[in-house]
Image 1 (tube, rainbow, N blue to C red):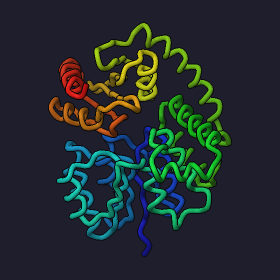
Image 2: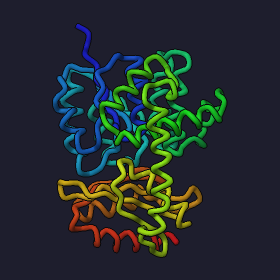
Image 3: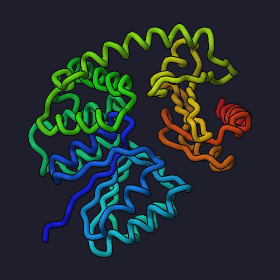
Length: 323
């Protein structure tokens, strides 16, 4: 009997959406778009005799053991492919390989590009444009494979479509329903501007960005090596980017309180910054009972609200070491 196929992918950005779309094109998977706090819950609900893909969901100490145990459970009868580009500690990588999964990991390219490369022999012509959207919106479009893929298209078109999609997704609040709509429409390789509501939502987000830029000038807190601001925007990564530009700082981050007693945080650094944000944020959040990590120039975190002041002190200390 044919195994059921599932894809669990990051549901908060274009990279995760593109990765899930590419997997579904090949496998007809049932797609779950999740954030980090839902990975284990969803994975544990999947039957062990299944074909499972997990995409664009970085592994950190708080979930690694549970994730590896689920991998072992599934690979006894089924198969699991883990595709990711975040920092992966050597001991966790070794345990993942020992659990008999297929590991596709590189920090040089985004998850969408890695997914495309892994599945390209089975993908339809033109599917590579989804990997291009992922690379551009994840700020990894200058990497070797991504650059080669983008060169097959008109660059201005790909930039336009990528930005429109990212802005529409941000305005929607990265809602799972909207993400699933994008995944479904991408099965027919529709351009983002052809998808219902995308253009309208992108325009609304552009107006909102203009308002946020003015708010940053008044409300952001400036430190020697970074600046930060609390924001109620649904996608605070965009706010972090604006902080860098508006205040001319090497690092910016935005944070948002959620009703469970945590701050959600998103960090960005300039292209020429020497700081390794993912490594620093992972180190600090582990110390204070939170979770976080990501790329050198972009990452996220979740910390208990009472540890915010401690986070700022530790973050300042770490950034001072690199400047």
